[in-house]
Structures are given as structure tokens and as C-alpha cells.
Length: 84
Image 1 (tube, rainbow, N blue to C red):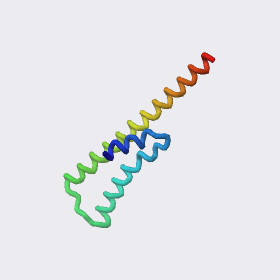
Image 2: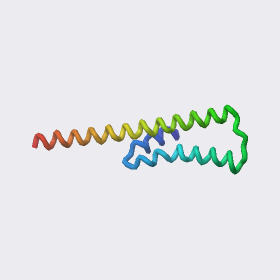
Image 3: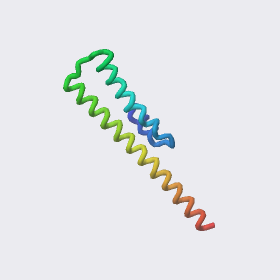
Image 4: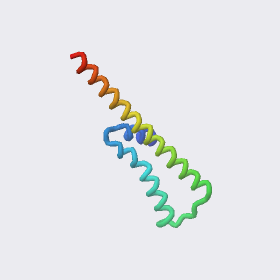
């Protein structure tokens, strides 16, 4: 559910909103490491790495979708202006 929301936020004009989830993950990791003084096991490190990779990839995909949508609109306007 969060991943779908993150991708949709990335595909908006305000693309930085898609970066909220990766930043929240970084904040959670820093909190656990510094404030809670939690020991990071190998499994936890792998989970964080996978989380960051997935969220960053979804952010990139969302930005790509937004750019493609914008290009499509610009091409449609060019075609409409060319006919008129």
C-alpha cells in the first residue's frame, strides 16, 4: 500500500513528495542506530538495503511516468496547433 502511494506521489508535478518514504526510512534507521542504540544484524541491514532500493526505484519509475505524460501532452498540443 505504501509503495503504491509512493509511486503515485512520485508521478505528480511535485516529484519530491515521492522522496518522503525513502527519507522516512533513513530517519527510522538513524533513530534505531543512534537513539535506540539497536544492534544491526545482517538481516536488518539487508532489509533496509532492499527497502531503499525498492523505494528509490519506485521514485524513478514515478518520475519517468510523469515525464512521459508531460511529453504526451506537449505532443498533443503541438499536433492541435499544427492543424489549426
